[in-house]
Each structure stands twice: as structure tokens, then as C-alpha cells.
Image 1 (cartoon, rainbow, N blue to C red):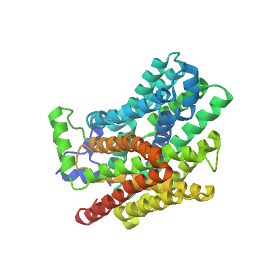
Image 2: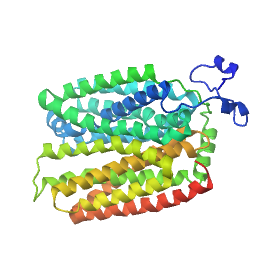
Image 3: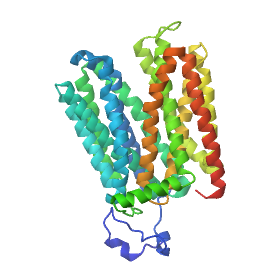
Image 4: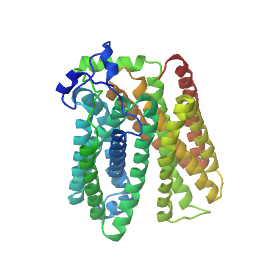
Length: 424
């Protein structure tokens, strides 16, 4: 298919598409599965997702070590993680719109490079305030990858394989969250937490440089204004859409359910009748690897059966997995955790791809709003789950998560009906 000759005058991050309504928009091809560009894009975003979540969660298994080294309480030590996730959520409100104005690739590259450098600085900090400062800056920088990557995929990949590509990207997220926890724990045992954090920073820096080199430049990006009035108009447009607000709610419910289970399952298994060690409980993060397979699988299945039905089925299986954790057999509990985790990543990958397809304009802002709700769900539901644990033990946690998932099923059913009304 011939490309219009006037596109050669544009820089990589400038729009090669004219404004909506010009027929020449259709002459710029999207990246299709199986092409060299698709392979480069997939590898680049997989590595970016892995690096992002390794950087974000690498401190979780070493919180007791930080508490001991800096003489702070466990609650204070946890700020090294919660500040990063909190600033990441806050940053999502700004980095998405920023990418709508400046370009997708440039924002992601700078964000990932800064996050890696901030993590390296963290390894050399001698004061607790310095640790918290650079962890907060790391989370803020990572917000420039999380939302923008979803938007880039929705713009550059052919619509028939967007869900599959989103699944591959999210599988990188799941491996990153798992590997960051495991690598920092092992290296801290062998050397020190500073070596562990520094090593993850170096690996992430390498991933950022590779990402910069191999990610194809945007071809379908069209800049929008950063003026507050324009951002407010786009925001109103998102919330007037029939599906986007429900997808935002779905992100809140999905992540709230997921984090609540993993926040408190460890407390249950450390107690009787199992009395597992902390190291064994930490290895439970290996179930994250199920997301590596379930995310692209969900994308492929949604292309065959539709996003709504596959999302509904995924949430239903999450509920089944949750109920299995109610049993006393460790094998049954582990199987339940695997089902719950695999279908969480499946549902999240579908919702992420759906955002980019439904947003008519300012796609970066729409993705940012989804992930903002996603991480707020992590914070709010994860904290509320503690009250249920304290008052009713694991039964209370299961009931609380089940309520969230039942609401998620209701939202998924409504989203399924929208598919018939608008081709997304």
C-alpha cells in the first residue's frame, strides 16, 4: 500500500495522519502480527513492562532489612513502596496528557531512563529521607511508561491484534513484578540490599536503552493541546462515553481484588495449621508467571469471542479461584491462587486494550484515568481488606473480595452489551 509522499517531511513523533475526516488517514498502515516491526515493538514493550514493575516492586521483599538498617518501624519502611505507587498513580493524571502533546515514544524513553537512574541513586542513599525521595521520584517517572505504553499499542498495532499485543505487554508486567521481588530477595541474602537495588537499576537502564533503540517511532500519533481547557473538554468526552467510565470502575475492582488477596494470604499461611516460613510465602509470587500465558491468550480469545464475554469469563474464574483459597489444603489454595492470578491478568489485559479502542481522542489521558483508578483500587481496597482480616480473618477477606468480583461481573456484563452497539 503506497504511503503519501508528504509524510516523509514529518519527524518520527509528529503526526503522519491528517486530521479526522481526510480520507488519506486510511493509507497509513498499522503494524500487523508477524512483521519485523511487530517483533521489535513486542520485544521493546515487553522489556519496558518487565523493567517498570521490577523497579516498582523491588523493595517489597527487603522491607524488613530496610527497617533494620535505618531503624524505622515496619509501617514506615513500607513507605518506600507505597510512596512509589502513590506518586505513580498521581503522575498518571499528567503523563498521559503530556504524551498526547509531546509524543508517545519520547515520553516513555525519558521516563524509563529517569526511573532507572533514580533507582541507582536509591542504592547509594545513606539517609531514610533520601531513600523515600528517590523512591517517590522513581514512581513518578514510571507513570510515564505505564499509561503511555497502552496508548502507543492502541494507536500503532492493527486493531485485530491490539488485544493480543496488550496481553504480551502485560505479561511483561507480571514477570517484572515477580522477578523484581525474587531478584532483590536473593541478592540481598547473598550480598546486601544496596547491591540488589543497584543491580536492578543497572538492568533497567539496559532495558531502557534497548527500548529506545528498537521501539518503532509513532506513525499514528496526532498531538493535542496541553491547555487546561482542552484537557477539560477531553475529560468530559471520556466520561460521556458509554463504556470508558465502566472500564475505569472495572480497573478499580480488578486491582483492588488482586492486591487484597496478596496482601493478606501471607498472614494466613504464616499462621496455623501451616506455619510456613517467610521465604516460602515469598515464593508464592511465582504464581505471577501465569499472567505471562493468560494475558496474550485472553487477547487472542477476545478476538475470537469478543472482549465482553472473555472478560466476564475471566472474572468468574477469579471468583472460583478465590473460593478455593477458603479450603485448608495447601495444594487447593495454591491452585486457587494460580487461577485467580491468571484470570486477573487476562481481565486486565482486555480492559487495557478496550480503553484504547473506545477513546475517540486524547487516548493517553484515557489510559491514564484507567490506571489511576486501577492503582487507587489497589490502595483503597487493599487497606479496607485489612479491616476484614482483623475482624473476621480469612473468611472476611474472601467475602470482601467476592463482593468486589461480583460487582466486576455486573460491570463486565454491561460492557458486553455495548459491543453490539459500537464496533470496538
